[in-house]
Image (cartoon, rainbow, N blue to C red; front, side):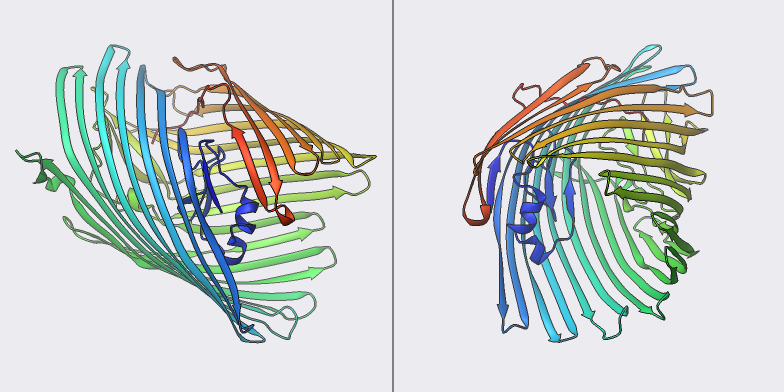
Length: 614
């Protein structure tokens, strides 16, 4: 398969990539979408995976054969490239005490990314009841990015600063992924044993050149920055997993599992100033650090499940550990040893299910690196090597029912979670408008939410159908904001109702019309901060017309109305796409598609979120 487009979206549907591209046979590690139609698999773009206006190209093949009925061999290669041009206007307003800090940022970015993926998968039938799968993947990536930032900040007393920041980023990466899976089968019904290992080596080398001119007005001053920041990372992870399950009798099931994750993370940061020959050879010890984190996390669990007619109950218990050693080139090492009790349960009755889970997560590597990231001198980021793992409690209640007589489907879900030692970002802002962030641990972080949906289908004569879909997603989140040593609980309420009508006439003609309303509201406990609210509207219209058997016409129109207009941005905008597809080859496996994206040439995505700025 191969493609080339400038549509800002994937060239193929994910189902086509899985079938025609052969990923159903070979499998994949990580499949990611960017929310606007782009798709990548294991760092290889299949179209539109990036930002701004994109020109994408790529291709590859997946080959499969069976050797002597016992060995299935799979070999694949894929290549993906994206050239993007992205302009962004960002206007941030931060209100605290009697001060309004307004920051306006203009960014122009050009980026070229390339990725090659080659790998294989082998399935061995060792015996009629034992199969071994082994898969390896090698990924080579390269990225060149140019960014130009123009930033202006002001407060109640007038201009604070202005900054021009020219950044040139060069990155080369290599990733190795493998997994080994042993799958025995048993004569006894209900007995299973899964054994699995996944190993990843991710090696990335980045050189970031940036030249910055800063002008400050309160008081008047001027600074410049010309540096190379080398950021080399190497992450090794090996996860081994064993799970055994057995039916003790017709009503009782027992399961146990063990997961061990060994990790070795290396992060070498070196900062250099240019010499008289414009060569970046003068080291800056205060902005350089070799940091490594090695250790292991493990989870051992055991659970039972008892079933009687429509009722099931499944309590479980687990023990988790996180043992790590953080080593620094300029300071003493930090050793961390944490142990957790991980209870769980699951209760079901008919269409209802209630579950409770506990888990823990170690801090992100970027939040541990103690050396400051000064590539944006107006927003300096520091790390905290003493961060603790976060411990989460999660509760879920769900109900699903399909009324076969009335063709109605109901889905109801409620969830709640509470986190101890969550990582939040504290900030300081000085009189010149320079912000510095520092991650800390905080408890009392929680959220509750719901997901409700209803669908009614009317099935008419001649294979015609009309469907009505209504849904709502809501959440209430509490976190902590800390600015200039002032702490405040911070709550955000999000409500998003939506409705959609679908008309399908014998798969020859389809019309879909959807509308959604999004409302956000923030509330601070401290009066030092100002609460806010915003609302915006979205609609999408889609029309598909299948002429004869091989020709498909389709068009869509997206519309957003955002009354919370930001200076320099539109209140509303449209995005109109259209395409015609010719289907050929046996089994309808060939497609020739001509598509036009953003016919009105607005090329705009506008949004206005609010949050505590990290």
